[in-house]
Length: 83
Image (cartoon, rainbow, N blue to C red):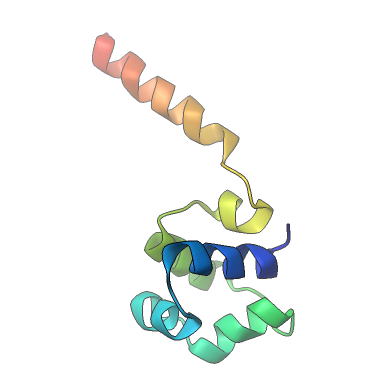
């Protein structure tokens, strides 16, 4: 999936409209709409704000899949606690 489809899907799953996501993230609604139509380029800072609200990684919103490094990080944290 592409970012536009991922964003639409994630909003639907979370029960958020673009207006609500804009309000919570601080990213302007026209910007978010531009992302969903492919008419505007994504700014990394804005993407991060949206990901924070959706509680996902950049990898997830960009590629539509779980970040493979997320599991590695979790394993490292468990390892640190054990040792």
